[in-house]
Length: 488
Picture (cartoon, rainbow, N blue to C red):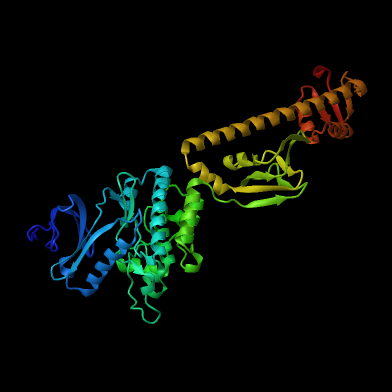
């Protein structure tokens, strides 16, 4: 085919010798190259043709980078890296390579389209991140570091295909400069750069540099923008050099899903010091997958016989699952401790108070040495956020449960007070002194204390019941409870 100089969107250089291709239109442009859809007439299929920009044809560094991109990509035989078919590198005629045509949109476009999609959109994006991690981890196993990971460099196919693209800035680990030989150039995308990249410390680049970039992508999922945002590229680069970015939960728009555990994963991946990040992409991937599927290992705790695990009336900041041992559930009703039930392995307790932000409704104590899993509030919230409908249902059940238990406790307490008051009336009938008006009275302080002890009802509750009764008064001067004739 021939080079059409008059059409800016037409293929801008002649086809290499022996290549029989037909230009089908421009697919996209980058800083160093342009990509066209072409038909390979020899094999009868459509492929993507990536060509070096004409103005860079005489730039030896640009040519070397372009050729290295083709060779690196071709060496990464992985389902999430697009395959390269052929390379032609002759700066006198044509510098190009062919690869698989990628149908679909960039990950960046997907995020923009679904920016109001809530928790479901977040989890869909995390599934893409898992596949990106797979591709990058594979590249690391081959000694290759991408160095320019960002949503715009991930393609999402129409049928679920995920491809990490644009390996033009990738570095071979065995060819990184040594300290003192570094040219100090900051290469990458400033909005996502790891601090070692932004500072031009290329001798410090390693797999954890890509971990940082992946953390930047997770940040983008949570916040809606990259870690570094400034008015100019230089100002953005300065932020990257200082590794200065706000915590995701501080800058996320109102109503945007912000699972605490995912935010924690993001912040660890974005740690300024490499030693504080995930040490491999595989570690980051595992954390993301465990978050998605809710299989993270939770902390365990062991209690000895008699230990109180949760106490009635305390705030509920976590729930528990019994792994080994047994527990007794008790509750105070009308001043007396009532045994409600026994709990054994596999049973959960404490979740209702956590989900509804109410105080603990009962006390749970270990009957023997008991080992439990501790389910923190943040983990429960993450799990509840996965499906909003189920979340609403569970919260409604928990609230109804607490309401019912509260009503039951109130009813039982009222019944106990009524029984205690019946004892007071009995005392009046059998032992009461007849007053001048025909009423009856009994000493109050001693009677109140004795009845409260016998019934288990708090004296204050019994005093309140007495004052509510028609015809009853308390003579403070004589310290007597008096029932008038009209009140009998």
